[in-house]
Image (cartoon, rainbow, N blue to C red; front, side, top):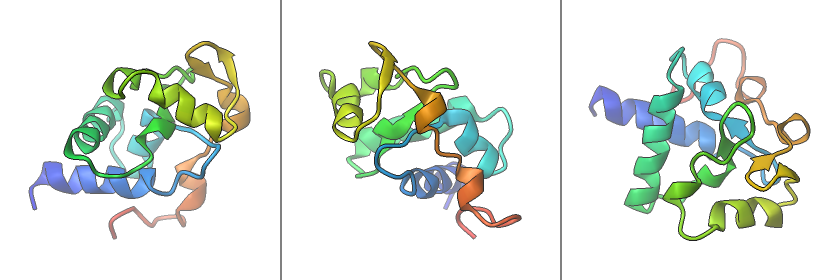
Length: 117
C-alpha cells in the first residue's frame, strides 16, 4: 500500500465513524490522523471515495465554518438534502449549524490511538 493509499484509508476509517445527524471538518479528520495542515488532503481523499463509489458518509464533512465546500462532488443538491434528512440544521443555505452538530473525531478515538492501527 502506498503512503497515499494508507492516508486515504485512514480518512475513510474516521469518516465512517461520523454519526448520522452530525458533521465534522476536514481539519478535524486531518488532526486525528496526525497530519497537521492536511485538511486539503482529506478533501482529496473524500473526492476520491466519491469517484470510486466507496460508500462512506462524505456528505458529513464540511469546512471549519460549516460550509458545504464538498457539494460540487455530489450530484445535484444531495449533500445538503442528505444532511437535512439526518436532522442537521442550517444557518445559511449551504452552511450547517456547526456549533450544534459538530462531531470531534478526537473524542471518539482513545488517547494515543490512531485510525488504522
